[in-house]
Amino acid sequence: MSLRIASLNSGSNGNCYFIESGHDAVLIDAGLSCRETEKRMSRLGLLIGNVKAIFITHEHSDHIRGVEGLSKKFNLPVFITEATLKQSRLGLNKTLVRVFNPYEAISIGGLSVLAFPKQHDAIDPHSFLVEGNGITIGVLTDIGIVCDHVIRNFSQCDAAFLETNYDEQMLENGRYPVFLKNRIRSEKGHLSNIQALELLLSHKQAALSHLFLSHLSKDNNSAELALALFQQHAGSTTVEIASRHMETAVYQITKNQSALRLDLLNTEQDVKQMELF
Image 1: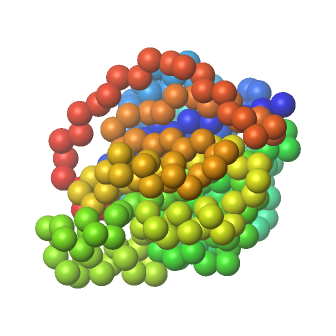
Image 2: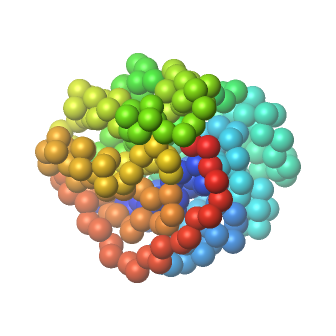
């Protein structure tokens, strides 16, 4: 038994994560346009018809940019908190809005989705665990501090998308103004490489087969630096980058501490817009 997972994009230019059991799939966030989401799924051989719902972590544009288009075109329910919906100003069909509460599991076909609160500079931010076939996938990005909720839920993951937003030295020596640097490294900002590594070393379960380093900053981190740091300490856990420029391959996560990469051709996309973080 297994789950199939992929990052369609991970970064301040757009976030979207795909998790599938059989013919039932969910998207965690939809920060790419509807057209780009379809394009990337098609390149990976993923069927948009298998997506049964979209779950929203918070209202920032890089997490909701494609929600309206996807929901309308494919008649997809959108799971969101009341506060996030109000703050987002999304123009969703009311019949497709589903309000969720933390720690109340939601069944989507063969998947169970559990939201939990986190610290971030948003009105009502949450992260998610998605479980199916006895396998648990975590999507833990846009996190300012490793709180008890993060620890408790990360420790259950068989695979996880974990934020590694910035390298502390690169941020400190970089071009950002002081107020923005302080915002990023605050308790409502983002996790550094070191904070994420400490979470991994202290709280991963033995069965954590795959860790996807996610939401890397364009200016304050590098894939090579983050990957080298984590690979030194990850042990039997395979470490990959969830890119801000392109989709990952599709990975088939099984319970026996292995993940099969389903090799598919990915074409790197140019990203020319300027992002803060």
